[in-house]
Image 1: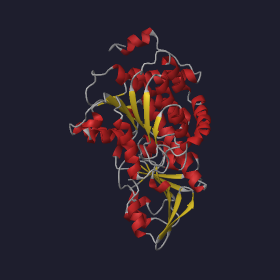
Image 2: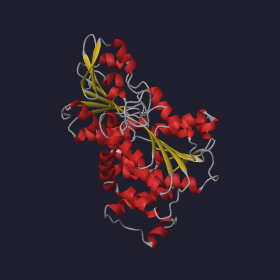
Image 3: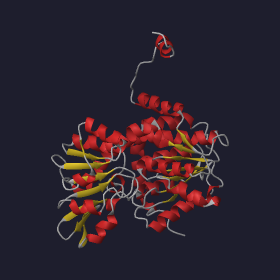
Image 4: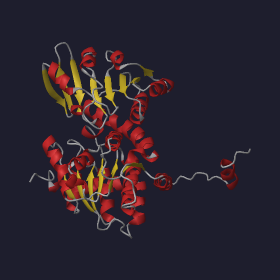
Amino acid sequence: MIKQIADPGLADEGEAAYRWAYNNMPTLSKTIEKSISRKPLTGRKIGVCLHVTKETSVLIMGLKSWGADVYLCAANPLSTQDHIAAYLESQGVKVFAWRGETPEEYNECILNILKVGPSILMDDGSDAHVAAHDNSQHSATIIGGTEETTTGVIRIRALEEAGNIKYPVIAVNNALTKFLFDNRYGTGQSTFDGILRATSLLIAGKRVVVCGYGWVGKGIAQRARGLGALVTVTEVDPFKGLEARFDGFEAMPIADAASRGDIFITATGMKGVIRKEHISAMKSGAILANAGHFDVEIDVTALENIMVRKSTVRSNLELYELPNKNLYLVGSGRIANLVAAEGHPPEVMSLSFSNQILSALYVAENEGKLEKRVHDVPKEIDQQVAVTALEAQGIRIDSPTQAQLDYAKSWQL
């Protein structure tokens, strides 16, 4: 049996972090409080494969307060905050997560939550969903699941298109209150939080190359410009490339940007974005960072193959000495905001995790009624999260008049 958490003695530190996050996640805390009295998930086993952070702890304790038995593992070998794992374990959550898991340990932790026979599986990246689909015994008890991130939804859709999906999955990532805020504002800020912690360098005046202009790339580009950087965007989608240009950024192929950039940030969800030929064209001192879920966007193997020597110069910053230059890699090419920092701010995860917990409840309440396919978050849940978020911040907006509602349904002026 592998170890389950790093250090149970960190529980008090983890509790303090949990309470800080709870107090700064008003949308989620209000969502949880509304249903605590009826404990709607009583008797449900819920397997959770998410980044084990202080924000996640609020979601986990919410599931527990709703009556669920929760089994938790990490969605990344380097993203676990060990004090949070210790706190959740002390509260009766079965945790299989610690920072620095080997690939083998990471996969075993996922299998440990599947072996308990969860009825609902919540995931970020779909490693747990894929593992469940690889073994019919692991998927047999699952009535449905949720998926948090863009890359994970792509993987689940691939299962669906191949005719292999075994249970319904709610694509939490596709909720407006998720991708408009979490992907853009959350990742935009937290990616630079990770880069700054790793490098301690000034961003102003540097040329930042953002690879990908989806919602994550948009957020990163906006934050880079706000910090005073000169921003170049690379894209394969003509519409997104045009949008980047109209948003005031340079748009060009990565082959052209490679020799110009000071900091490169990948945000595509695709493998092999920065390859050997791009690395060879980069100038000495360039910094490489990844904001995609998996460590496949920067070809680290190519970097390893052409290096003369590698060394750690700061926490989460490695120096690669090549024959004719030096390059730096943040967080071993894994997701920079979670490896080198603490992930998204609590306020934005408050919205995302409200979608997660309400979608899990939706799966439970509609057991046997949902088709085995990828489902969007129901519009009423998405809207409920937005309304709760406004209420939590004391913001009031207008409501349409009856005349306006009637006008919207009419073809006459």
